[in-house]
Image (tube, rainbow, N blue to C red; front, side):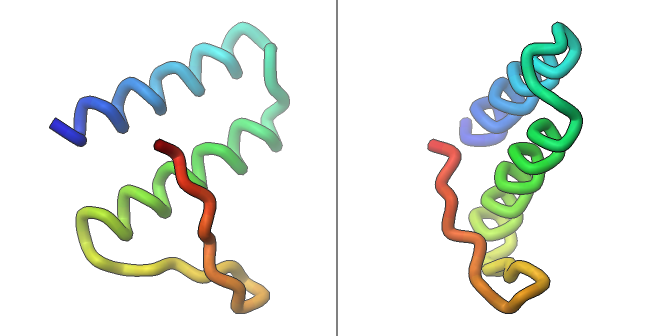
Amino acid sequence: MLETKYAAVIKNLFQEYYKRNISMGEYRAQRKRILDQMDEEFNGTKNTEPNGNQADDQVF
C-alpha cells in the first residue's frame, strides 16, 4: 500500500530530525514536499508554491 510507504518516509524524516541530523527548516521543507506529493496522489490536487511555481519534487 502506498499509504505505508508515505508513513515510513515521514517516520524516517522525523527520526532524522529527532536525532538532530537535520535542522527544523530542512525537516519542514522535506515534510512539505512529502505532504504535497501525497495530496496530489490521493486527491489529484497539484500544489503550487506561494510564488506560483508548481512543487515538482518527487519523494519516491
